[in-house]
Length: 148
Ligand code: CU
Ligand code: ZN
Image (cartoon, rainbow, N blue to C red):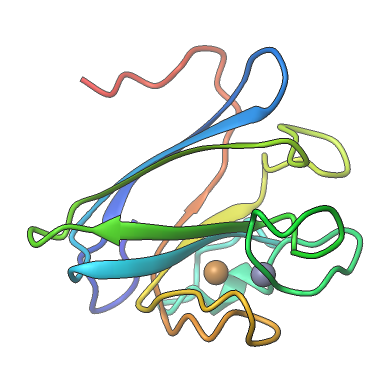
């Protein structure tokens, strides 16, 4: 759901099949260009600016970084960047071999937040990725969502 003053919204689906966790994000209403997307530690989008979501999800206290940076070189919640087209639509499809659905590294009950700016993968602790334009809490569902 969009935060106050923003139009960004969409769906992020985490699916566990064999092997890695699959992440599929479809977001609309963005400004064209790159936007950071992270799993944040608190499943709380109640604040108008989504600051209630807290910091990036990082159960082991790793530094911020790129999702490809390797074990202990990025927050578990660092999912990278979405690229929005000229119409503001973005899709991301990736796999993550450290995140889980539930348990210590689990995404269920955490918040997924999309940002106004690109994640530079270097600036601590948040990649200098700007304000929070959309926020949603991850729920467990038995079946994949209908993306019809
Ligand atoms: Cu974030
Ligand atoms: Zn991070």
